[in-house]
Amino acid sequence: MTVPTPDWLDLLPEVAAALREAKPVVALESSLITHGLPRPVNLDVARALEAEIRSRGAVPATVAVLAGRIRVGLTLEDLSQLAEDKTARKASRRDLSGTHVYGGTAGTTVAATAHVAHAAGIKTFATGGIGGVHRGPSGDISADLPALAEIPMVVVCSGAKSILDLPRTMEWLETHSIPVLGWGTNELPAFFSQSSGLPLESRVENAEQAVRWARAHWRLGLHSAVIVCVPCPEAHALPVEKVETWLREAEALANDVQGPGKTPYVLDRLSQVSGGATLAANRALLLKNASVAAALAGALGRTV
Image 1: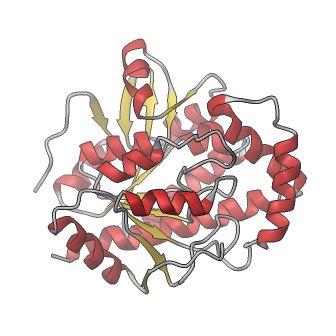
Image 2 (image 1 turned 90 degrees about the vertical axis):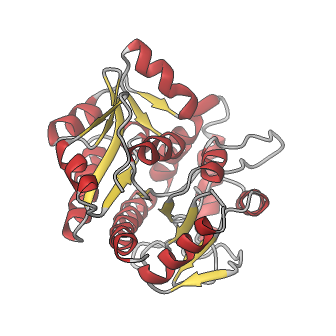
Image 3 (image 1 turned 135 degrees about the vertical axis):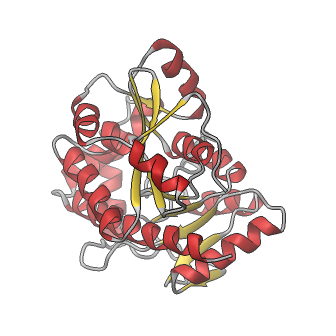
């Protein structure tokens, strides 16, 4: 059944047609483009993600706010504009109304992308890493987590970002009844690393298994997302100990940075101190997650 499109959403015609015809569609976030990757790598990766999803038989739907309009699906020109706009904001769910009202341009986070994609009727979402509980005594919890607790989607990621407190993030997900499935793995991936040492209770080997799990979860009246965690491809995966060493160096350089800009700042410094190794791993896992999400979107259309 086609979901009526809210009047505050602009759907790319290709995305609108795919939803009408029940073709597989994969949502993509855009804070990765505006804040997560350096220029010009950001545009290159954005295009590569869309191409990967198309090659797997699905339609990509990158979500962003352009000149105040909340967009689902971007043209190549739109992607270029977003990638080159140094004034673009980073919008979570709370920021959507402001950028919408005042005509701003913004890359959408996991939380905002999930909200918009769900409103459009999209059930599958690919990203790199979700937000989570931050390290240390601050008690900072990403707005991604409450969104995942409320929005019924299949979210494909490589775990939470490695700069976060992974055990506490997993506790939060468990408390809020959000299933975390390992894609061919029994351990939570640690973003750049294939394993975190944290066991997962549930493992799936293919798209059909994951989709059956998700549909059962929602049929039981549970309305959270179902997270499918895909390890970084082995050729680009990094040892946890090495990432932790680089992370300490990067965080030492970010002591004076606060607020929503801190995570992008740390990730940028992490790429620098690792000699680009984390950037290569990030690209590889993003492409793998897009591929898996396309398979899941196809299975969602076939599985009742």
